[in-house]
Image 1 (tube, rainbow, N blue to C red):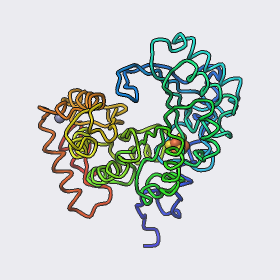
Image 2: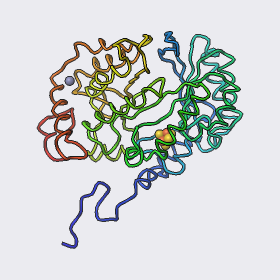
Image 3: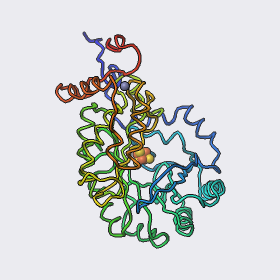
Image 4: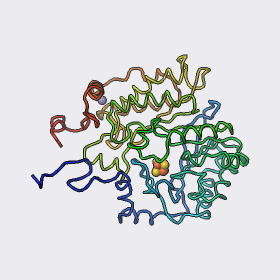
Length: 388
Ligand code: SF4
Ligand SMILES: [Zn+2]
């Protein structure tokens, strides 16, 4: 019996590992290091534009500039369980490289002349001095103000202190800060996401941003690791309710599996499946009355916040997906709702796989199985029923 193999989530008979060690493990592998050195530090990771809506509801297009940076200081210390941004960073990016990347983006889109909004994403926090040179923070804030573009930047909560915000606001009087809150629940933040900040820090950031009259966009994670589909749905509905009054926009990020992350390990070990698209439809149906209490649509009088869901890798097994035949239509309806806020976008959606999804949710909510009862949705149904 001494040699009995214990089947744990994180290996065999070795002592249990800390989540922190599992997150850090892939970062020093050769494939990650090789990839990092292969990037050109003078070009952004990517630049593209998408349809968007200005703060006042006017339709426009937004240029998204994803900069190649040193990455996120929380990642340097520990990191979130689903975050694969480390794949896209370079350790030696300083002000000169960031400025070259910015010039590249401006040149490519003719100083953003045909677009009303610019989103600047840094695989971390733009206002964090350890990650982004201060003179570059200033360049982004100033350029977007002078060019008359609505600006969205991303940040963790701890950078959003009164001094930093007052400094930024002097350069650009009106911008939006998008915060990866992920979950309105301290336990989920700590044990499922390893977020490294608590709700106290979120509420402090909200207060500071409100004091400066800056807009807030909150990202919520749909189905973090170690959570069943049924739990994810129930939690996320509650989180949307909880942040609707504090955030001008709520962007739901349904989990997609990025290479080398903890969630990638769980996924490959058959211990996790990305969300169903049906769950996202249900989430919209259950939260529409929170976002639009009078049943209105985006831009209407009754709008409390704006609910956005653009599922990354939708329809693929590493992103939110259904059976394979209805994915395209369901994704389209979800994306249309994100733009219009009109619940009628979801009318008429149906497929035989919806009954399987409904059964999964019902069993997740009644059986004591923390990871849920979900099975792969693609491939041979009989083979899927067999133990992995
Ligand atoms: S805070 Fe954001 S960028 Fe940093 S590790 Fe977490 S998800 Fe990644
Ligand atoms: Zn289907």
